[in-house]
Length: 201
Length: 114
Image (cartoon, rainbow over all chains, first blue to last red; front, top):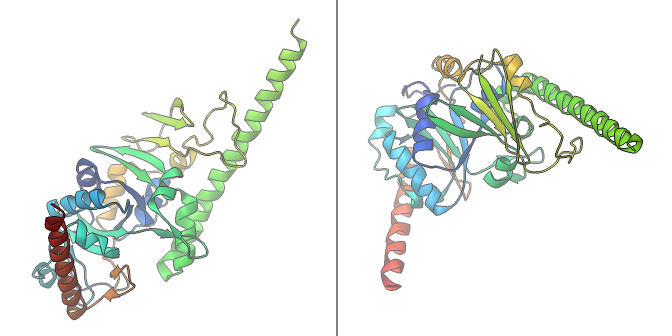
């Protein structure tokens, strides 16, 4: 069942541009990240894992204020949510694990972490080491690896996650295949170099 | 045609990647080796953007398509660090009162430390 609120549709370019301009440390995860990796399934919101450091949360709060963010709440319209006395700041964000927002750039979810296959927490720092940078018009963002996205969706195991998994597994298989081909190419190159060295006078 | 730049373990590599993400360049930033990777500085990056090349749309196209995505579902709600779900007006108002109390406490602690 979808929410009754009817906020603006997702404007990913604007959302990422505002986060980048406010120097927020974050990794794009979920369906938006899958789209950057080549998945075709549409996502209904943008999900980001943020660095859980107070200064970064303050920068995130500034970005959310700029986007006129209001909490997204089940059974509550966007107009009702706007009327809530919510003051977005680092302190408030520090108390939340996952927070769901309606912004002028569409639905936006801020996550404290992702889960691995076993449900263990994978924090921002770990996601960052495996991420890919995507540069667009006005933004540069880190996008979570397909492995991390698959693990999180496998653990979440909701209908929409199960629907997204086959395509993600296909993308992962292609990526692994390319890594293996690259590995074989590297080995062949190194053996060739060693042979050349041996026969040089 | 457009240019993508890949970087792996400090080795930058640029190539042409026709047909994908026309206004985007990608950079692999992982700093550790995967089992099937070579540590050789001569090695080209293991990720060459092929997946994106095969599947892709531009960022602009992807963003445009997402304008028509369905709105979020009811299971997407704010969850506090202690596990409470903010799925009603009452739960939100209780949480906002707690946050306000924390702000007052932090301000008092800050003033006392001056």
